[in-house]
Image 1: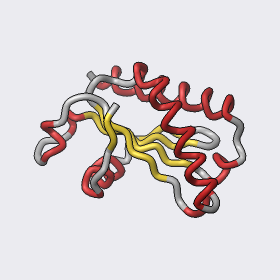
Image 2: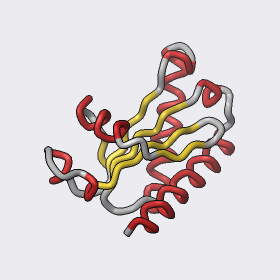
Image 3: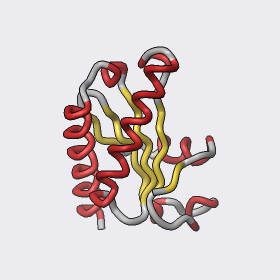
Image 4: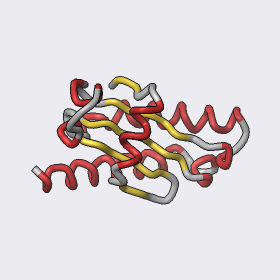
Length: 121
């Protein structure tokens, strides 16, 4: 799974306002076929970006949350559609959540994205 790196790509995903939310995680998603113009239309495969604000905690806490999110995204990426961009946004409560809880929420979110995108096609 590749990473979303540019601000432009993050904005494209967030602008569509398609999302799935759980207690500690919000997953914003964009299918590549939704994009008519721009560089994103030529991208193949899944890409993920992380958004962890200062509201989550200090730098050490934010980095720990990002590490957990990366591990879980890699583990459950097979649940996602083949060509999509995902932005994982951490709610402040994610800093206090245990790994098992985050794992269940991530799996649930990715399943929901899969269901929602499958129903559109």
